Length: 234
Image (cartoon, rainbow, N blue to C red; front, top):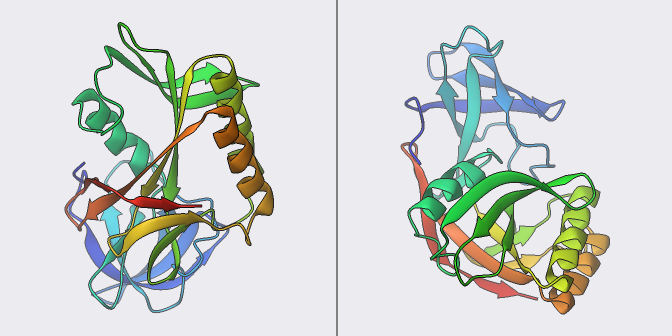
């Protein structure tokens, strides 16, 4: 998935009110950018970080910049936009490029199911069970090479696992797909110390038959694309 506009570098001043960030452009101007990430962004919001912004000229948008990437000192990138995984995965699913989720005839995003919820992707195909795929963006890393989810307490995430478990019990295929928006991690685990309830919901979901897929990403200021499967540690 290519970015719609060329990204420009900036320096982070502060992130606040979850969806706003003050930034300094290379020409010295200070601007406010939209942050498409409701999580804590633990480790990704320190003052002075080099970040990448996507400008826009949409008259309907109040903010003319959106924060897309963090560039780390070692040259690795982290994608902070939680909307990217679904947009990228939709294209990859349509092209049959997601290992473990190929051979489906119809791929529908944002389908209502469960208790007033929407599944990220609902897949159907001849000779295949109806498949429910929930997607989570993973950006936390507290240990070199290891990505973790979640980065804050997420009752909503636990609810999604419960509903996937119900689909599995009903005889459908249910998949929890974690997309690691980092280029410096080769494995993933749950951050049970941050949200024990989510970890508990995950264990119950897997016992009910929910599958787990985890992939990394190839990230640059030009594009974000699906990478390889990574090891998931319990």
